[in-house]
Length: 591
Image (cartoon, rainbow, N blue to C red; front, side):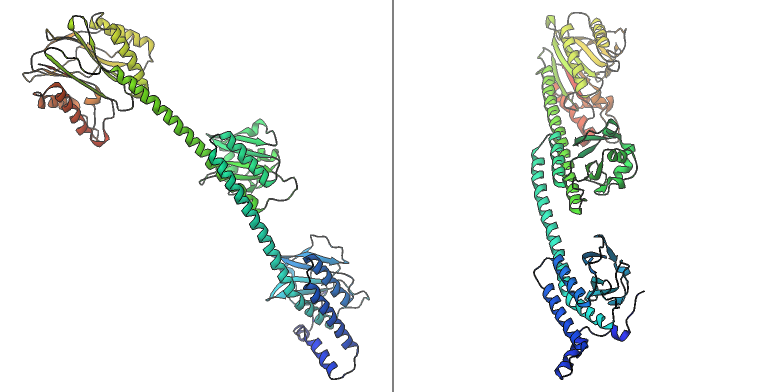
């Protein structure tokens, strides 16, 4: 049972009994047992103050102070518990054989500063004294029964209050010192970690190899946390893939985990977390199966892009908050470095592709005639503008025997590099076949070649004509191409449609040859669908009507001027967005 002191005695200042004893001694009173007891207590308090102010270590000071109190009160044992956040931990003991983990919660302390009885529930305790500073309990002194078996009395309470008054300031200073020491240790660790992170950051910035980065960050993490095993997972497509393993050999099931199955565990990583606390799933099971203890997310945004997982420390010491912060910061650096390498690789690949496209464009431009040929009685002008680096449109002027000239304009289905490669093949075939057979037979042979050697969805629209400038006569075949527009000198508008289907799409085809007699002043425009199908921002097409209008408005000009008028009209029609397809045009004017 706990014995509560009388209110008057409980409120008595700690110095009052000693002041009364001194006053009695100065008045010449007899030196009785009471005065002797007070003088002995004063000497003990003096020894206590001297001990608490000594340069001994904190544990030695508390142990010596406990011995002084026990000696004065002839206690058979005792202990001192000191505040550690919201509880009081055992720091010194004599004669009690208490486990080192002995502690008391603040809410379990008695209300009175001195209580006789076992108010703490600690085995063998008969008296409890609270040490306060600024109204806050900072330590607890607990004593075992007296050696002679007598009970503690009110005079002992006064002594214990005096002990508490003497001990309050030194114990508080000790607590402050310990706190500062701990803060200084944490600050030193932070500075050390920042230096490490800075050095690692420089290494990561200098590396452009993913494997080197993975090796560096896992090595740095293991060295800093003093662990012997580490795994690095990265999000790759719809899987979480093991990118690096150190100190262990993970099984096949743990190497690639579908993201849908790992998402719950991965998303539960708010920061560095104990793996046992992750959301259940294959990822958590795999990490626990390989004796990994701590998971650290790799994230630059809201979603984790991977994680570090490390094993327990060989020493068994827990991971501190500083360790978790270091691992989290290192994870962000690692992910940033890996992203930088990825972007560098993409940039390098883009530069390589740009160089190849530029090379392809130069080759394609070399396939176009450097300038239209000069013919008697006929003026020619031509242009081809690809919508991308390379295009699928083509035109050519091929000299034929007898002063004749083959004029071709072709358009391969699609755009870009695949179309340009097929167009190069068409160019070579036309150069080889032109003049060796009639136009219809030439187109039929070209159709057979393309049908046999290209994919089913690839085809070519083409206008092929053979011009005899002396006779001003043209025979032509239109193989599914935009019909050329002829504006005669008399103002008649004619579309050249005689021919057949597109080239390369059908197995067996035949073509019809058309003929055309040119008169002075006739204007012929052979264009690709990049002209007639050029659209405004609201999807209205340029069309054949506007092409004829452009021919009519510039018919008095030369072939180059007529061609320029067509191109300008198309660009004005499409606006800033430009043409969505290759633009090719050949203008022929009979002089």
